Structures are given as structure tokens and as C-alpha cells.
Length: 88
Image (cartoon, rainbow, N blue to C red; front, side, top):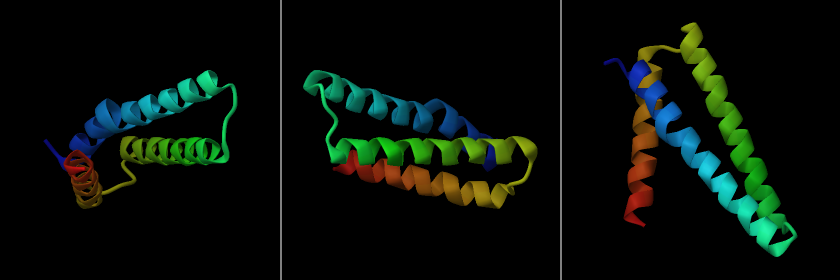
């Protein structure tokens, strides 16, 4: 399997759903508190921008605009970040 395919699967099956889960958690907190603080608003905006960037990346993958070596680098960066989160 190419890194392009691995990256696409990682984004679709793990990264984007994780972002959606994080957004859901923030919205639940806001609903419980009946108000959003500045930190929550900023985090929502950052997560939405990141998700948008990832969807753009998926579009680039689908259109063949990104090379497999670039996908390998991005894939490895994401895996490293995930492993760093697990260690915390």
C-alpha cells in the first residue's frame, strides 16, 4: 500500500473523526455551561481550520496533486504526533 493510500485512510478513519469528537466534547461543555469562553471559541476555530486543511489535503490526494513522498512525510508526522499524545 502506498503512503498516499495510508495517509488517506489515516485521515478519513482516525484524524478527522478525532477532530469531530473533540469538537463534540467542546460543544457539550458549552451546552452544560450555557456559555462559551474565549478559550473554547479559539479551540473550536483552530479545530475547524485544521479539519478544513485536512479536507483540502484529501482533495489534493484525490486529484493526484500530491506526491507519495510528501504523503509519507505527512503520514509519519501524524503517526509521531499520535504516539506523542499516547505517551502523555
